[in-house]
Length: 298
Ligand SMILES: Nc1nc2c(c(=O)[nH]1)N[C@@H](CN(C=O)c1ccc(C(=O)N[C@@H](CCC(=O)O)C(=O)O)cc1)CN2
Image (cartoon, rainbow, N blue to C red; front, side, top):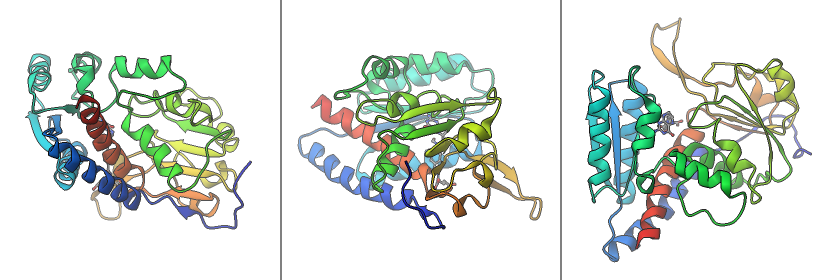
């Protein structure tokens, strides 16, 4: 069951969609501030990984745009487990911080799961705390009064705001990372979305066969070019979430590469650009988590 298709894919414009969502959130923040509630987003950034530094900077730029306070905990790459835990404890205790994220990936040697579980679930702006993910496991329908994983929610919001109905659709997710692949099925399988989800990963024997069956492909593998045109069913919707840093042989310079290979735009009915697709939605839905938590608290 696919939308009528006549060649070139339409663009799932994440920049414009995120801008519209941020404009809505700016009004909601102003209303909160009028009632004496000032949302504050904290970030824990460990090390100087260029992508992480850029993403955290973007998150704080977004906060300034909508009126959310920024609180930063920046630690050196040499930070010990104890030092990272102490940063988490400071944000847990800081009343000005109404929600925060620990920027991933953390350096090797830091126990990521222990850090994520140390976050106060009521301040979990990423929606990745086991308590909040567990609430999604328990509830397949009805209102959700806890934060949702930003990128999965951003993928769904991006498609729905472009008029794509996911009910009854076969969705193939590529990648099993904590920020997308391991949690997106909890949202897609909810009764208010009603998609059927196939999670593929490095252990999948015939990835092309899984992708070819899908009406919607969401690739968050972090594997440049893993989604080739011949794998995609004509008229399918494709979201390119993967971000890999590669060195361009022609220039010797580093650049971001997505999971979707050239040519998929000639097969798909919709395609999210990368950059300019799911990334800005991830940031916008992070802000939504912070605002919604503040609205629940008032
Ligand atoms: N704690 C978390 N860490 C990470 C997450 C997450 O959801 N929570 N997701 C990814 C990276 N990510 C969020 O931090 C992220 C990826 C991309 C973008 C983005 O805005 N991309 C822009 C381009 C940015 C640029 O290169 O200038 C785009 O696609 O247009 C934001 C956030 C891993 N870590």
